[in-house]
Each structure stands twice: as C-alpha cells, then as structure tokens.
Image (tube, rainbow, N blue to C red; front, side):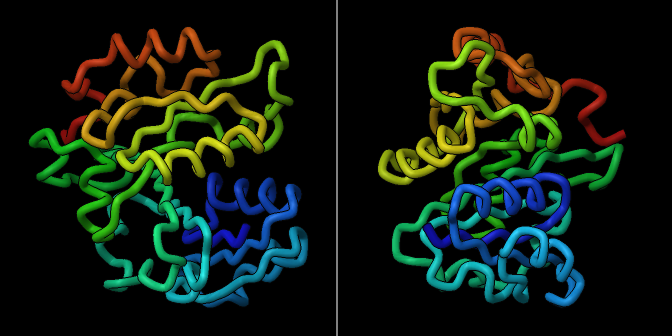
Length: 220
C-alpha cells in the first residue's frame, strides 16, 4: 500500500519504521522541511516529503501530531489521497500536559470527532493508547499468546476493514470500538487507555468506560 504519514514523533516515527519493514511505500512528513527527516528516511527507506504532499495518491493516511496543532494543518491537506482512502488519527488531548484548553472537547465533544471536524474528513481512532515502544517491539503473529488488542473507532465499514487489516499486519488484534461518536471509550483516563490488554479485556474495558473526563485529563 501507499501510506502517507503526517507527523514523525514517537507514534508516527514508529509506524514509519514498522510499515516500511512490512513492505509498504511510506511518505512521511513533519512540521518542518523534509531534510529534517533525512535520518529516518535513510534508516527506513521511507520518502520524506512536505506535509502538504504526504497524502498524495495514498491508500491510507495517518495523522499523528499534537492535538493542539491539528487546526494548523493546511485546508484540504488530505484531498490528494485516493478516493475513499481511510484516515487514521492517533492523537490524544493533553490539556494540562501540552495542549491547553480546547473548549469543544472540554464541553464533551470526543477528541477524534473534534479532529475529524478540523480535518474535514472522516477519521478512524487507533494507536492512541499504546506505548510507542510496545508498538515497535511487541507485535505478534495472529493467534499468538499474549497478543495485544487495539481498539478502533470509526464509522465506515469499508474503511474500517482496511484499518483492521493494517493493525493485524502490524501484529495486534483489531477490536471494533464502535462509531467515532463513541471514541471517548478509548481516550486518556479510560480503562483501556495505556493498557496492553487482549481482546476480551479490551472489550470489557471499552464497555466500562465513561464519557466523563477525569480531573487529570481536564483543563486546569
């Protein structure tokens, strides 16, 4: 697949490494010039590009940037992807730790719904709750004991099928976490966030989640 990645931090950089290892054609960008990603490109074989070019002709796009920076992306930045290509967003809202107050999220809009509104396209929420080193090193073959499950929220079944396949290929069990409107079930502070659960425990944790933001994850 042709995969565009916007953001080359812990999760974006890790996905660049893993997806190129799996033979995918990856175009990766950050908020600066492509030259700043020369080491990552040389290491992985990915192509470093400007952010505006990352989605060009992509079968899948991954947006992995700080929540607060989402509105700064150029309008229509994802329009050059292939028709129907799903967009994954891996972000989390860290109001006290990084992002400051985002009024809509504080008022109850799920984080990924807000991101989708800023991007102007439907998105799928996944990779937001796994430690990046575990994403890099702990993928296992299908059926292996101890395989980590990753919840995936999103609305379109066809796009979700593609996202499920990528998660499985990376070595994790995809779990349907419902529509994007219920993506709050995997936000920071919920029972599944930051855990390396298997499928059954992931489903139970999603069911136990509350949309109420806990104090640590609300703006001070």
